[in-house]
Image (cartoon, rainbow, N blue to C red):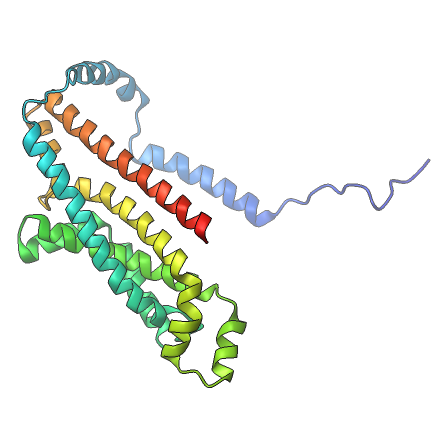
Length: 264
């Protein structure tokens, strides 16, 4: 009888840590369902009520189209201004957050960025509403703060992915920190910075659509008022405007990012 050759396929060994993590995940999932009183029957019983409410949304009520479109424009303005401010701040701080450029300041800047993005945009909006009052201004600040935290992270990661040989070669020639940034780093990360900025603008437009629910300006205020008054047809029109706005921005964003990739 021939023994199986050593080059044959070996049976994969089970990783005890992975198995334990899987079992824990399943048990915790079941525990959460029980703890949160997740009831399938309530879901099925509410289906008919949902169908009735959904039917009341059609046809959409376009009578109040002017304030809705103005609110949509305000949403775009909040997202654009907040994102541009965040890009400017993150652009300056990302060089101080990159470990290969600024090893001393990198942990501090990254820690601040982690704090900024850990708090959701909606919570930042509530904080700024208390500080400066209701309106689009707290919405701009909320978008700016959260986006700054995210952009510092991705910008600094792009810088850290640069070949260390480029930076070391410039240091060997006696180049200063600012010269290394302008001549060695920026040409390598400009495309990445631009792509991430466009992506963040796309995200912020979606987030700014919700800020109006808490009084931070934008189209969210219109849909919140419509739902409170049970005007489902008006809410449907607002939802369609949000969909058209986000879809158009996403389409333009994808084309812009595709053109960036082709040029790079």
